[in-house]
Image (cartoon, rainbow, N blue to C red; front, top):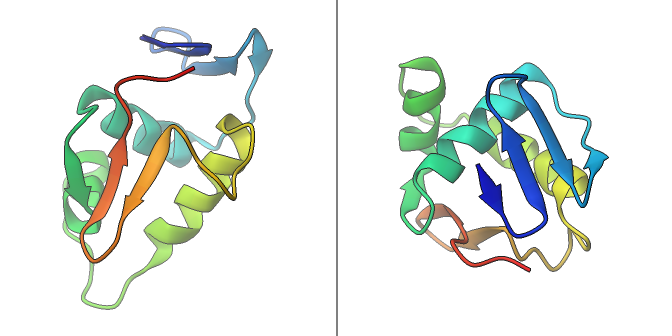
Length: 100
């Protein structure tokens, strides 16, 4: 999958930005792929967790927010002003269709 300079190679389970490899855990890679496959759609934390592990989040489990921060640190030029994975307050996250 290609989104501007972001490339997700599902066969090799590798992510790169402008040819530079991104260091993601297996779980973070799975979260990124789940978002990228649904680019443009806002996903709740529950939907993301279910897509990745086939189970829903527990009521107060906010670990997905930590993973999003780490994914952003790996793939965004400026993680504090993300352009690829956007937060939709009160709902969840959306992977931007148009990038770079």
